[in-house]
Image (cartoon, rainbow, N blue to C red; front, side):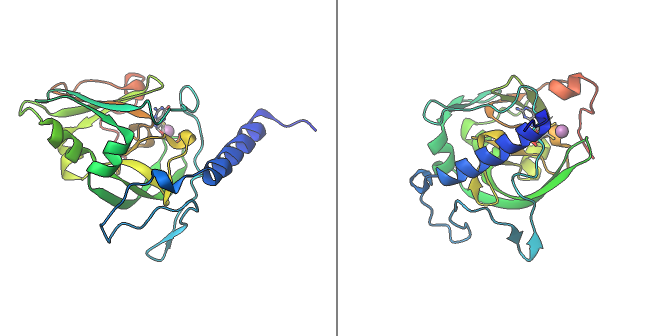
Length: 223
Ligand SMILES: Nc1nc2c(c(=O)[nH]1)N[C@H]1C(S)=C(S)[C@@H](COP(=O)(O)O)O[C@H]1N2
Ligand SMILES: [Mo]
């Protein structure tokens, strides 16, 4: 039987999502004493506070260079730029040393689809505060493993408690969804929700343009 390419991609996505659920290792989870944070499970949550959530397989994978497969033990999150002490943080350190938050937020892609997911992650501002933000800073630029980048105002990141998510619907982000981290760019178009984040640069250049912004999409990304 022949399958068209989108059928094959869909099948691969479903299989890899199922597989990542099976090999999900609870040993990797941080220990928490925060009673508000639900322990992560390998089965995704589909309802939160009485409302339906989308499935983590409802996304369309149309990233610029396909899914990135990041090696967790080699991974380091770099925080640099206008900070008093740049940081290089291993995955476990981000997850265990910073307070966890969760939020139900909808991602809207400019292509006309949307997904509502329960995200869990750390606040970007908590990472930035650890690095010590220079008072001249006004912009945060994010870079990813596939060469993608985007930027957002520092005020937005701080005032809105913007999350760097490591879990969606109670499941660790699969590679297709941006493991180890995806930015939860609430109230901004999906192209601001950078996946596979490797570097966060604090800057005083509000005119920096990321991948889609350079190609004509709005700099603010406001919907
Ligand atoms: N690194 C990286 N992040 C990215 C993209 C990308 O191509 N590369 N695409 C963006 C776009 S356009 C959207 S709509 C969201 C959607 O997430 P998804 O690809 O998991 O569906 O990811 C965003 N983050
Ligand atoms: Mo998108």
